[in-house]
Image 1 (tube, rainbow, N blue to C red):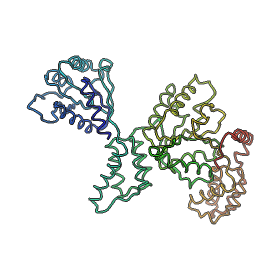
Image 2: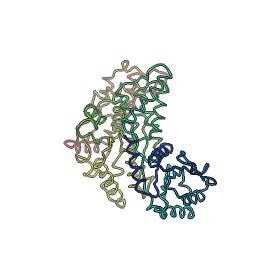
Image 3: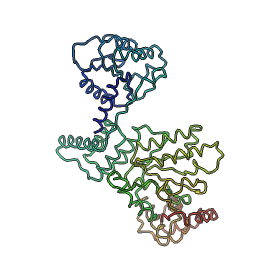
Image 4: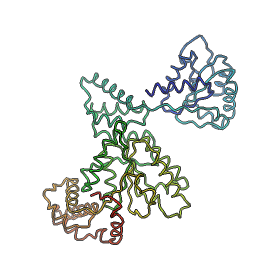
Length: 496
């Protein structure tokens, strides 16, 4: 479907006698093949040019010939101007030769000015195009469509068939994982998608859910997003998160709609905000959303964005949001969002402009990008951001209750290859009321240091001693926690 649309749209540009067409792509062969099909239908010669071979006839339609000494841009363009028959010229990687090159730019302009007489079409094909002002108004941009779900599905099945014929057995997968793979490959070119599909199939003849994070990481690297967003490779499953029962249930209900938004007549979920005490598990919950839904997690730290791109924050935020759309379906995590969007107007208005950019994107975005915002100080956030409609829900991540603390102890003990059944989880959970999840983990870590130092086995008693020697954040910052709970009452939904 996308291939037919590409051909139709490019045909119109050529038929409309646009003198120069710019195609910004890494798929040079695909672009040339597309032009070859169109040239054949129009009964026009197609020539390709690169700095190594010069002009070459892509196919012989008649006996027209005269391609000697055309390696340099100047000689090539002079040759084009001398050709009487209307032709299509695909210039590959031509972008370096129009930068600070007045003679080349002038020759291009000559081709444009003689368009009515010559009827030639010049097509720039490059990974990146920077067009000089002298000819910019004569250049029509053309973007080749990225493969859709049907094309990706057909591509996976084709590669699976090739592997099966070569190895005498079928590729192992299931329909759910196959659909997730198709979704996660969207935003890539056909050639990049094919390469990733081959890698995952040739590895072990299977497409499994465990391989999806590696595919997402490879996609992130191919799209060259490093520097604006960070890719969180380790995304937790909710089985590794103690408590948060309401949040887990809420997300489970929306998982199907998020992945099948095109099939279900229901507004897809937009996102949520997690508010709570530091160390309460907000970051882990953000990671767990992506792990639960088997999609990539992209993290945008507003503090880093401001520091690194001083004076260009709004532009870089727009770039980050565009990149998230390319990675869709994904979870976009705004970590400590109050650092970048504050009601305090002492930064020359940058925060207000950032807020405007973000609100506009949240209102207009129609891609499967699920936003998870985490905040420690909700009072610093403007009401426009936290009202219903911008995000689906605000969850308050409070200190874990006794049952959640038991789960957290079990999770962190098992994580360190310790049998949680050998510990008195009930006693441990009761002894650490007011502890955050991270403080519980630290009690276990401190206990392990103690046991290794004394050459002893870790026991319940050792962990209890570490708990006694810990002053949790709920004690150190009791007043601030009380204020936060008071604000959350009636304004948020409990995540526990």
